[in-house]
Figure 1 (spheres, rainbow over the protein chains, first blue to last red):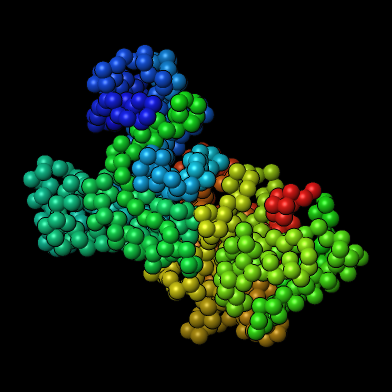
Figure 2: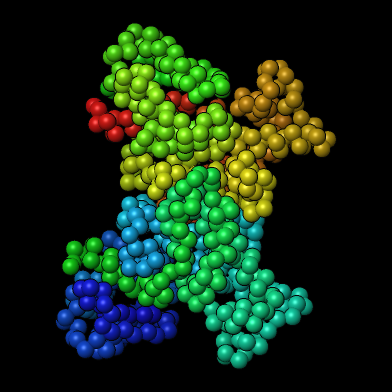
Length: 311
Length: 311
């Protein structure tokens, strides 16, 4: 979880960060969020009363009109009224939107996609999420569920996805898929320094930092697995461009944040091979995100200004 | 080519239809279009001077601001100014839009998708095309190229598509793909009555009518090939729904027009298996088009009213 306190010009006055601890009751996590908020308020040297609003990016599908998180399996939330609960505790207007949607709004308004009308954000981490900006505004679809690029199938009958289906982009190219494929290769007898790197960094999972280190040391297994993931992501980018014809696709999330052009370059190359004909194709830009893990919080602020008509 | 003459209430006053003959110069086809227009005007019992505007759905990517067909390989057109040429000849305002986009507008405004804000049209014929209605309006993307569902990859490294890439939906589930797979099965020694049906109907291609007849006679090869195509189309529908979250997907084109629910039923079943979680999924409708081969012309009329502010 990350909290930013920003002023009217989106300058960051204070911030705080903590791992998400799943608690037995949703209200336990609300306590954690408010404690983290107070840390950031303290760092900014202001008081809670000086805040105009609180805007939150939360996982899962959101009922934005009621501020309800409809389903967040990783948090154990089902139809949890996060917005109303926070409003009751803080006595401030509270906005709740999907975390990937606010990340896309952040990169659109303040990051890689500034001055663009039609943009798609693809965030690659443990999963793959996406957000759509159409005509300068977040496009939410009819039930607030638009943007699920990670659960579009690009390899029918491919590997099983966390969602239960097979062949979703998330099951082929997320950090989770990369970890699965590296482990399988090692189990099959391929030599790799990844287990040793994880031990040295005291990591139980193949984090972006482990992946980065393995690529820098030219670990053959990681290089091969990463090349495959990047090819799938390039085809995913092309699918989205052929369907929506945006000016720009921003690749965000931890891997893009850490690896930058090393991650995005090969994705862009494959995407251009799969773009549909047309002379204007060169105009389409495929860029790494610029805001790192601030994208979500900054996007939430931008969205709050739009929805609450704040300055 | 099909021409409709309609009144202010979209009632059809006259119509005409002719096969498209590719001619050496684009102006040859303009002559054909105008001759066909005059047939329909005659059937309506009016004169050309009584027309308010002409609105055309044309294949390929369109520069709608200039009325230019940017690329239509099947017609041999490259950057052909169809709109200005027709305006010069007819002295009437002329609108040009992509044929699948106008088909989608037609089904949205007057057919299966009436009273819906967010809709995707998928037209299955010799190719697979699509159109997107977002917030009640045609969504064209940044270069007028949105909606190319047929060229999204759903089976990486799958069969070669007409666009040059592999694994596009069009290469898996169009009528062309169905014909290819039926011919391959017969060549491999499978027994099928399809060649005989084609001969009896004097068809060189596996038209919708041939496919319909083969399915009615329970031809085992056609049934199997069709089941596969329908499964791919169901996954394509789910991809589009997971990405765009529309209220409704309309399946149009020749096969849907002739087979109706026999074609769309199995597509819908697979789509629902692939829709992402969420209680509201049941609300999404997957419907056959209602306007048949009038969808394009009627949609062109609706679009002309919007763009020219006609009543």
